[in-house]
Length: 552
Image (cartoon, rainbow, N blue to C red; front, side):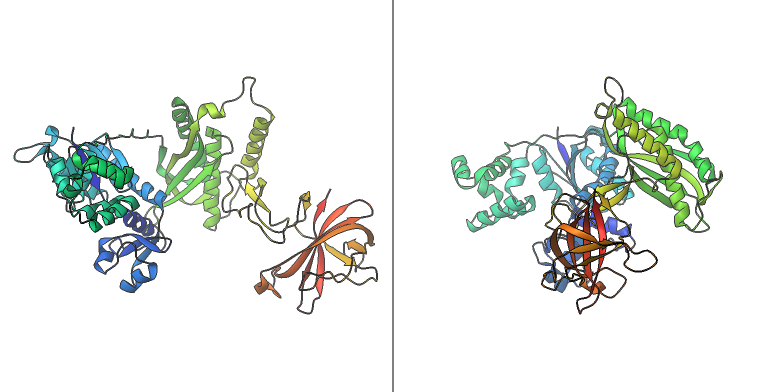
């Protein structure tokens, strides 16, 4: 069976421009653009090459050649995500697609099925696929057909846009031997290194390389050189690893007429949520991440607006969980549109809802989330109870603390809504100079109360710019020192510190808390321990004391 390869040149640039076209600052898809990795051009499109931009150039050199060039960051996930519609489009015409990498795929070459009078079946199949891909927005698609995968890929690189280059049957080796050794540079760093070495040895064509003895190849060019030599000889034949198309697990429901009540949408979507969960259960799967999309009726000449959000679950979704997420998402739409969220039935939303869709983002085997032999334990009961409370009081009303990196006790905690996975947290494994050592305090004050620390002479203790304490802490007071109620001072039994830190200096004198600060661990004679913070409030060294946390 012969092999057909589809090659989309410069796919990383194409995917980046397609993603930019959907953002707030779109770029024209025909604009000169490059993909950068470590400030080096790794991919450039034809428009950029026409201006003199080449792979391997530094960023500043590329911008000097083409000042209007669009700079895109390398993102393999983005490339694969935007190539998925191409795979689906090809599968609609020819099943058995084998994805090789983003921008390159292979299928068993169609033969007599697409043949017609005066037109070869392979050429007709390529023309049909090209027409189908142009319909989904892929304009530069090139096809190659040969007896094996490697030759078909080389043939696709010889084709013109929306055309097919077919190597006659049995002539793969002759075709490869007529190619220059510079074509190996397209195969990555190993290919570029081998191509440069062969040119310096005076070998111009791959046929010259194939004429070398097998022993010389293995001794001088390594395993990769042997693999290329075997391919040129027609000995190394790679087989296709066709993928199985993923099952269609998405469920949707349309409303005719559109519903303008969040409660009405929530009530109508229950059956769809149950059908979505049942379809997963039939395949022994559960969803831990679900994307919910709601399409709203267009207002006047404005196109259809879509509210989309990915929801995560600490365990796995049930139909009731999905209904709750739909309600929360619609309530968030009300808040963002300036409408008041009312708990009464019939609360209006920003626009009538035309369609609601569930798409599984993360699915896992159901066996990993099954109850134990004797039913669920205390943890499962807590999860169900908290989820029920969250359904009654709202999504953002139930939060859990998550540890993150930081210097102070307050900076090291982040509050995340129950069921949501924390993202964008500061890394814990960084040094964080000025961080207090363990053990961590058990209670952190949201609004730190006032404090006062004095030395034996009754002078308020401060910390100099070099981190030196002006006096040994002798007594301290938790609470205000003036006003209607004055708290007494407590003798200091033990203290540790200071742990100085100087951060956010640009906030000094403003509403922020920037400038020099130092933290102390203080234990009173009553046995209670506190984490106190001294911060400078003026350049002359004056400062204020406050209580950050307590050790219970």
